[in-house]
Image (cartoon, rainbow, N blue to C red; front, side):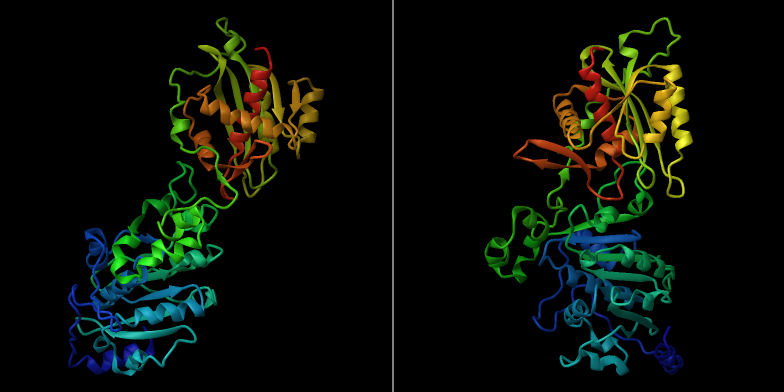
Length: 476
């Protein structure tokens, strides 16, 4: 608590001043005169009653009432004696947010020394604090500022809640890491810390999509964060009484592409420009699960047959990305189809891949199974592949990244669409499929698998495509 807050508490301690806060239907915008009305019962419960989940995201298009909702929610926490912060990106955005927030403040609930801030002539020029009197006669501080202007200024703050407006404007997730580290104090009645964000959504190449987008699988690096998060949708149509009709249907809409309308008006996650998901829906992949697929029979198994002849795809990396091995065969029940039989993902340790571990698995597979060939991207793999080739461990074939990769990626997509490639539901492989995007050259009709985010792994998908290509090319 600041010196001003402590001083005020000392003054009122002997004769506690109890102030009258607005009831939930009495928060009124001092400029327009309109009363705040939550868009629905779910929003009302989060604004007036609940302090969970730990991470709450009010997601909407422009003009849906995000800032008003955040403002009243923040005031309700201050009413109950919780100290926190109301932040945005930088000083210009801070002034815009402050101009909206102060219209909802019941200024009789602010300590007298700070009521000058209600003046239209006063505007913030740096991080500042405003002290409120809670309904129990104590004080609660609100720190207001631009979190992105100087992040280090926030590192000593210990608060119960942090409300953020339009984090989508921040290029990196540094702002989130600092924010999450500041919320460490319970409220006067044990209320848990909470992060509340109000923002237009982003495209899927933005860090906010990583934090609040769909769970990508059991290996999602932000799985724990997402399990403690909730997204509440606010709709522009529900705030229409406070907007010009042309905002949605007229001039504003005319300036946007269809994908931009999806983000800025409909309030939905958008596909980043130039990149789209490899599969239009993950249901295309999940329905190719074949529970009858068993691991391939080994070389010494007398029941081994043509369906146990394998082609291995290998997509290598030195650091950051995974090193992927995927073995496929012709499907045991339909020789025209492909079946995924073995999958191995090597993840970087301390930023690097252990090549001896990779080589050990390759040698082990080649000893145990009937592997007819290994196809691979030669980039950074010369030493290991030359050693394996000279020792006769396997027939190794290079896949050229500039020409053949387009063919293998296209073929994999066609096999999925045509339901001609089947899998035994291996979690790591499904995660990589879900992480895959594509760039499509309509003139050349070429589809290239890419990451939807740089942090996501897609190496198993690339390896699977190379293996499937060679498996169908050979007369197996």
